[in-house]
Structure formats: C-alpha cells, structure tokens
Length: 256
Image 1 (cartoon, rainbow, N blue to C red):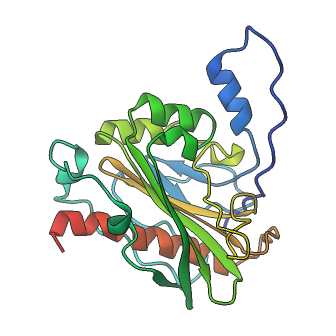
Image 2 (cartoon, rainbow, N blue to C red; image 1 turned 120 degrees about the horizontal axis):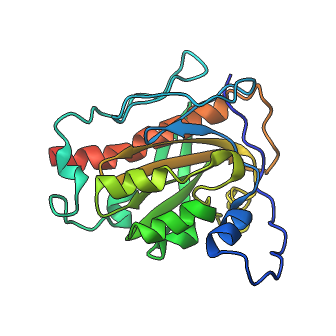
C-alpha cells in the first residue's frame, strides 16, 4: 500500500516566549500533519503500517509503486554532473521551461494547469526547518504549478527548487520531515479552478533530488476530502507528475 498523507492544518498561534529560538518557532509552525518518507535525497512511498524509512540509491529513480501501473523512472543520473552546480549549469530556470505544457496526461487523465508561480524567497514556498534550510543554503527560486483534471476529481502541485549546488540541495533535503508537513507548500488555484483546496487537502507526495535541484509533486482530491489508505489513483498521479517534471532536467542535460 501507499502512505496516506493527512490534510494540512492551521498551526496554533506561537507562544509569546522571548527565549524561544527562531528554529524552534519554525519547526512549530511546520509541525502539521503530512506523511511520507525519504532518505538519500529520495522521496518514496511508504506503507501505512510500516513507519521505517525506505532506502534508495543516490541517483534519481522512481520509488516502488503500490500497483503494477508504476510511473516511469526518471532518467539515470550517470553522466549528468553538469546539473551539480550553477557554475556548470548557469541558465536560470523559468516557468516556461519548467512547465512547458498547459496540459499533462497522468494516470489515464488529462490535467490542465490552473496556476503557476515563481517564489524567489524560497522559504515562502515551504514550511518549518525545511523552509529555513532553503534560505540558509541560498535557494534562488522555487517554481510551482498546479494542475486539475477535466472532471475536477484530482489536483496536483508539482515543482522544482533551485539550489546553488548538489551539496546544498542534499543539505536541504535532510531537513524535511514529511510526517510533520516540514516540506514544500502546495500552490492553491483560484476559486472554481478545482485547485483551491490543494494546500489543505490530504494527498500523496513524491520527489527526488537531482544535482542542484529538488523535484516534487503532491496530489490530492480536488474537493479536499482526505483519501483513504486504499487510495490507488493519487499515488500514480503524484509519481507521474514527478517524472514529467524531472524531464525538464533531462532536457538540460541532453539539450533536447
């Protein structure tokens, strides 16, 4: 089975204690209910009954999926060291490059982009200690886009965070805690778009670290209801968008 992620919840107001450290406050604000697990810069599905971290090789590849219809693996990292540093990969990542298609096919459905955004203050696109790590490691931008299928059943935010080098991306990744929402914030769409609840709804996360980039996706039910532990479509949607977005980086390597 795949790991079910509970909805985001509004954080309680922080106590007015002058002695509380900045990091502790950020952790409190990020301590909401999300789930998922990752090691070695790799996000993976996790069985609900098994809270132990999964393991993965230090290269971009898809996690084991909960059904036979697994999402395609992102391309091999071998020979792609050009992505490890902004010195060898100096071109800024734009919205048009990150999300070239208005429509994306995933899990047997066609999704339409309802909102896209670049956040140069990267911590504004994340939560808790993960947000602080993005700032400390000099993240230059987080690009996010939210897509909704034609029937407005599913909504998914996918995106890429840009760090100065591979070491910085890996350092940021170590600060995430998906079981407490210490990760990226989903990007909500406009009223009536079908994506207006993605930032509060429970769903499924997937992602990977590739060179100086962190690729991520988060799929939910468009109406905001919390998926059950037997949910089969959202994991496929999330994995498919992760793989689709990672192709942006493959094109940088191949020049395609």
